[in-house]
Each structure stands twice: as structure tokens, then as C-alpha cells.
Length: 273
Ligand SMILES: [Zn+2]
Image (cartoon, rainbow, N blue to C red):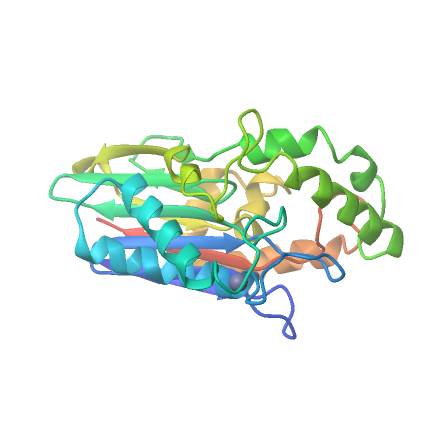
């Protein structure tokens, strides 16, 4: 397999809450949901720990078992719960959570799974690539962030509105009619979106945290096809460099409202032929 990847924290003085890892036949990408300072989570380990522990557990599962991806994720969520349910309050509404995007190659198919807002883009040689995303988080968020989007990023007012927004979103997390994300409830794994593509049709497949996919889905600066071409010809680090440049051009989010001026950004490209 040929795989290239890059990951970059939003800020050099904060841990990267994205996780990416590969085996000889699978790729796993997680994006831990950041918790602003001053908000409680009930967990002493933190979001970066949650994302890398769940991610590495899922990687281990995928090397051990051919079970469906949702079952591997169910078992992984349960395993991570068992690592800290005796020290942390996992019933807390702010308990750490992470998005999941994963690919597994079997003899003749490429299986995919997405949960919450990380994105998979598959190039099958058609004009438009296939974009696999779970928009339940985005649809739920859009109902509640009018006030937040109207405020300049990086101001105390924006930080306060972000805290209120996150409180509201916690009430919709892992509930029917809301959105689903990997956290303390294994049921979320069954709510993942999944599917498969015949491997012979696949040229390449990209996995992106929302900090990297924003070049297309938030900023609209390139199409999905152009994003794949950028990954293929210039590499994941160049995609992230272009994201950072676009963020610097709009530091207060006045043209492109967003929760964070910069976000952890991760991109992986798996090339098949
Ligand atoms: Zn904990």
C-alpha cells in the first residue's frame, strides 16, 4: 500500500487532538472534540488521550478481527470505557468524544465507516469523487449557532458564545434526532454510516479531519476533485499549508465564520493505482 499523511496541531502549545494510524490494510482517523478552558468534562485524562486511546484500540481490533467495522468500533468504545470508568464520571454530558473515519481493504472491497464530521473522499475515476460524510453534527449545529457565527473569532464574546453553544450541543449528543459521536456510549457505533466500494474501481481514498476538509467544505476554495489532486500531486502537508494560509487571511472569521481560527488538521491519502 502507498499511504501519505500529515497532521498539524492548531497551536504549538496545545496537544493535537486528532489521531491517525495505519495497518497494512486499514487507516483510522479520529478527531477529538475540543473542550474550551473553563468547561468540565468529568474525565481527568482529556480529549487527546481519548482520541489516541480509542484510535489505537481500533487499530488493534482491525488487525485482529474481520468482523464488521461497526462491531470493531463498538468493542473499542467499550474497551476505552473500561480503562477509565472507575476513575472518571463517564455520565458527564461533556465526557470526551471523537469523530471516526476508517477504511479497510479486504480481498475485493474497500469498506468505509464515518461517524460525526470527519470526511472520506474516494476517487473512482469519475469526474466527481465520492464524498462520504455524516452531516448530522453539522445539521444539528446549524440550528444553534447563529449568535456564535455573528461574533468575531478570538474575542471574549465569541468564547462565551462558544461555551453556550457547546452546552446546547451536549444535550443533542448521542440522542435520536441529534448527532452521534464516539464517546462513552457504544450504541453510537451502530449509528455510524458505512458502506463498501469494489477495490478495482478505487484509484485513491482520502481521510480528512474537519480541520483539513475545511479548505473545501467550509471555505469553498477548492472542489473535492481539486482537493484530491492537491493531495495526490503535492501531498497532505501542502493541503494543510493551504488551510493555514486561508485561516490567516481571515483571522476573525468575518468571511468564513468558524468555531476556531485554527483547528487540528489531519489528512491521509491512500493510493491504490
Ligand atoms: Zn478519563
